[in-house]
Image (spheres, rainbow, N blue to C red):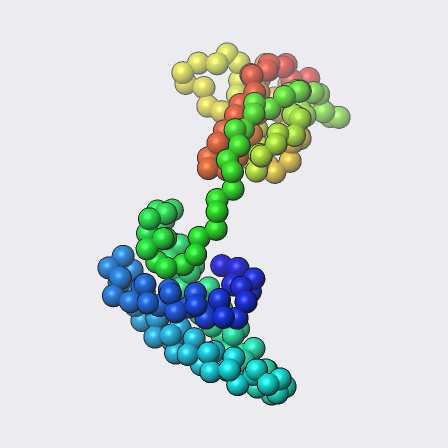
Length: 198
């Protein structure tokens, strides 16, 4: 969707490729009505680029306006293609849009230095772990001891590596664990730790 990074001839070429590839494309039948405006705007953009070559200020402004309109139309179509492709790379490729190279996937490491500490007030617990490289979020879970098949983990998600849990019942032993959440649904859990609430 980063159409602004392309030079103007390349942007025109992308618009032409997309409209040509998607015309009568059975993968996206309901997106066909969006193609003629893109094709028409791309043709206007090509003319505007030619007219603006001599440096006339007004013609450059017209070219830039047409360019922004073309980018807006391409982005709208691209977003719908992404939604309808639902992660299917083959469908995305068959749309004619250029695909960015996916980031190299790293293995998410188990969170280290997991600590369960008393808070400043009664019934409060502090959970913290060392920052995990590649983690997008952290999932904090706790349940009453002992752990059984019927145990229900309470879960709190956060982007931070430290969380304060309050209003826990006093004198009760709880079990705690933290999971680092990475891209593509990667999950890595700490060991389970226990602590009496005071």
